[in-house]
Image 1 (tube, rainbow, N blue to C red):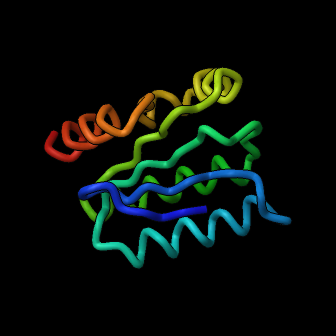
Image 2: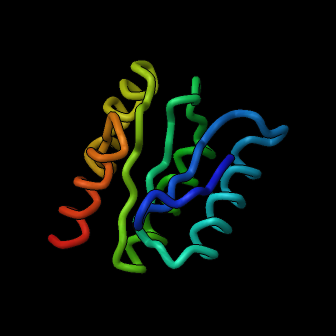
Length: 114
């Protein structure tokens, strides 16, 4: 899981490489957000095959934390089956989805100035 910055974005990579994925990812995501002065976050879902209920909780809490800092969260490159899950659970209505970094930045700029 990386946490590079891309301009004024914090880019987090959500993957399933951890022994206890939801717990480890959640802690790492929160730590990265708290350590960063950047409240605008892109969560890269490109390598995610399955979203667990723990993953969903992590995303919701990350969104709340970013918004409390006057920022936001955009989900990047979800695979088709993950995108369907987001749509079917109505999470897609709460998380903007982008296919690339420039689109994510545009979505965050419009959300953070609205």
